[in-house]
Length: 350
Image 1 (cartoon, one colour):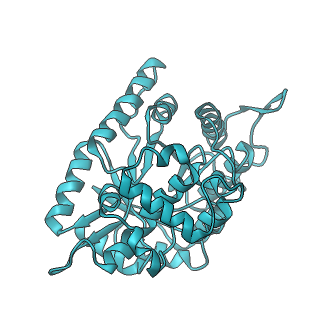
Image 2 (tube, rainbow, N blue to C red):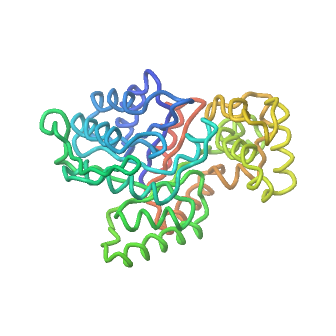
């Protein structure tokens, strides 16, 4: 299986991209969460100029964040800096919208957005709508300004069949956050294939699937409950608890110990699941290194479902199962010591 990394957009990110390329990793991604992280287009512009081979992705942008013309201009501009190396991840904006106190957009809006981006980034005209006004638009500044000749790869963020169907109808790949269940991946791929066939589209054997996770190789007699393990995987676990704290209906489907962890998190953040401004208390430092006082919230049940922790044999067994389910690339999100974590990932999958 191929390997890549996902990091927060920030100054100095290009140094990590250079190291990832030197390690032989396949791709380097940055998040698009405007109120939490830096701008991904700025970050990847630096990475594009500093690297030569590694593929560069934004995971993921959304029609609820950016208009299709603005997003297409950003991706086509990146494509001019790193021809044929750009990956456009698109989604409903689940996290990025919630950090604004807003709801994600719909699958229908996601599909329209993806269609428009694919058209514009390939140099075609597309339909653009604002309210009741509809216009055909296209790039008027192609050539030296943007690259619409070299292909841009597209991947749709999916946890269920609706988004997977968008990927199938648009001939795009899939990207999913913390989804390590091979059975669920098979279902996503089935939904993607069925949607592709229903629209007489080639399902696209070259459309790749990516899973974002955290990885920790246990050393010696190290146990699953060590502080290092909790720190390495805690950002993923707390991202789920943050979502549960912000979404009572989802929290109600969790187990008793997990619901208790959500309650403790809300208490520590000084808010409630119904407070209108809860998003300002829940999401600061989202996907960043967790505070030591929050280590007790990193429950083994959540850690095991969202992250890869184990011996070398354990990890390779789980990764092989994901590969057999159709996952093409493992994207690790390092937060403690990114250079060391990237080197371990490259060594594990060598």
